[in-house]
Length: 331
Image (cartoon, rainbow, N blue to C red; front, side, top):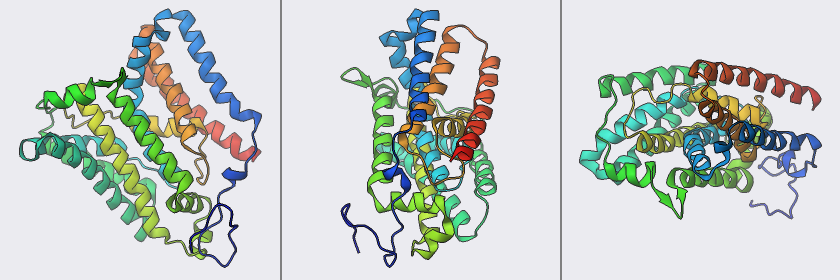
C-alpha cells in the first residue's frame, strides 16, 4: 500500500513510521556548526587573505570533492546502523580496474567500470553483513584488505599513469560555467543521496533499520536486502570518488587516499550524524566535510607541516566521537 504525505501510517501497515527528523523543531544547537564554519573561514581569511579568493575557493572545492562523495556513502552506512572501513581500498581497486579497462572499453566504459566495481564490492560486503549477521566493522575491514591486495596485484604495486588526457581534461580540470566538474559531480551525488533519504521508501527503511533493526523486521521491512543496498550505495560512492580522484591526479593509484576512510567517518560524525544510527542527513555531511576541508586547506596555505595535519585530523576524530556521545546523552 502506497502512503502519501497526508496519510498517517497505521500499525497494520508494513512500512515503518517516518523518522522523528521530519517532526523535529529547530534547536539553537543546530546553528553551532554553521557558525563555526563562518568563524573558521573569517579567522583563516584574516591570517591568510588569499584563503577567501575565488581561485582558492575553487581549489578547495576540488580538494574536498572526493571526501564529500565518499562521506555520503559513509553517511548511508552509519545512518543504517553500520560502518564502512573499506572505502579507501574500494577507491583503489575501482580506479585501477577502470583504467585497465579503458583500452578495451573506451573512456566511458572505463568510467562505468569504476562505478560498477565500487557498487559490486559494496554489495558483496553488504550481503555478508546482512545475510550472515556478521559485524560491519570486521567485514568491511576484511574487504578493505582484499580490495587493496587486488589493486596492488593488478597494478604491480605502482601507480598507472595511462589515464586518457580527455578524462583528465573533462573531469579533473574541466569546468562548466566556471564551476569545476568535480564539484558538480559531488553536488549531484549529494542531491541524489538527499532525495533517497528524504523522499523514498528506501530512505525511510534506512532510518528505520538504523533506529531499531528488530522493530523494522517486525514492521515487515526486508532488513537483510535493504542492508545490502546500503553498503552497495557506499561502494558506489567510493567508485564515483575513484573517477574524480583518478582524473584529478592523472593516475590510478593502488593505494589511493589511504586516510580518506577515517576522514569520512570524522566528517559524518563531526557534522552531527549519530554513530548509533537512525538520525542525520546530508546537511550534516556538508558541515563535517567543510570543516575538515577548510582546516586542511588553511594549514597548507599557512605552511604547516603535513605531520601536524595528520595530528589535527586525529584530534578532530576524537572530538567528533566526544560530541556524538554528548549529543546522545542530551537526547
